[in-house]
Length: 533
Image (cartoon, rainbow, N blue to C red; front, side, top):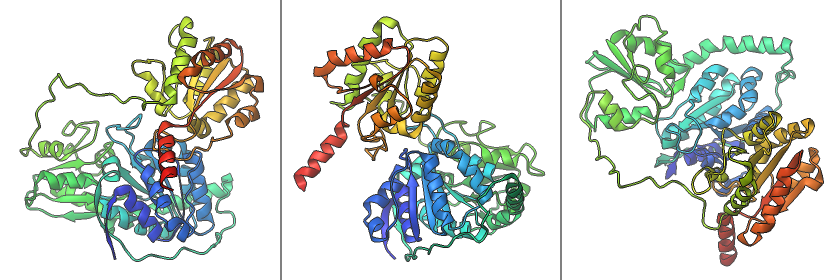
């Protein structure tokens, strides 16, 4: 058994390989990206023949992992919290089909929105689907829970979610590894219609899912990840979920606490343990990273009354990450608050890399659209979203992956002309193609500006599904080849690029302008590798 210093993401990735995982599927998204990258760069992927390629989006990743589970092998799908929105359709239905080989869904939530559009809590999805959810306290638990999760998945033939957050995903700790397990052999489902969700079959399987809930609750009650430590001071008890348990321990700064503590690392909630602490204590403070899901559930438990405290009643902040100081303040304990940042110190907003092709793309677009007035450019999620900031102030929306195309279409349908969308090459294949098909089918008058930097740039330069095939995809969904233009976003081509974009803005139909130039970071890495090879 080795001991390694690992990120939470890396601990999960290594555990997957050690636990006999045959395939991992994902779409890059902070803070989950490093799980796939660790497998890809470990050398174990080729040694053990583990499939580990990026998918076009989270839905296709989940479905492919489900297909590998169908074959009887262990598989993992990884994504960030908003990625689960994209995968929600197969996710919800997989709880009803069940699985064959062990299937883990790893979701990395991002409280405080360090690099996300919202703070949503994936535990709600787990409760919604009625599947087991595991929430590690630290990197060691993250590693161990992968083994446990695969076994639990195979025992109940259900997908199992491991939910982590940014702080755990991107911090390091020593992890003791276990003996490696061999991969499973191909073994097809014993029920030939298990995955056929026709209504008659789906109703039967749904009843089976409902019947399993008592068993899953029993698993939680006996789980090594859920434990109740008693205390003499019953004036208040603490329920600490996942990473929040660390904050509770740190708030005491090594001192022994006298209050009962229920540590939660597995869901559904262990009813007997919850009823024990709520029955014994005058008040209960719920510490959880994310939404107040446990706090809400406790208010529905018998006999809890008004003694439940947490994010809902203002004892803890309603938004953002917890930390030891916030928890200490809620406990009424002394804590050290750092000095206020002086007003002379200003935040430094993110900016495009020096030499980024998106700079010249936006400069050409801004000059082309200047005479039409503001409010006509819909954007998407990627490096190019920085075009919303000075000095460009160029875009007017950033909602979700692919929304730029469909929002531009809706605005055009309302009579806005020109209606422009800006989308990256990876986001285009993730969620933009179907919107473009709608625009073609309806003859909507939009100009689609695709920033093609031949990579998934915002998350570190992963492979893009669109590389080398954007023109063919656009023509394939019906865009007139005469209105599919490619420009080189360099300063020396500014006048020509402005001319091309201006002509397409005037066109009453669907036009696509592809601003193609390799990501400057990818270029530098490639040249460095060429020098050292």
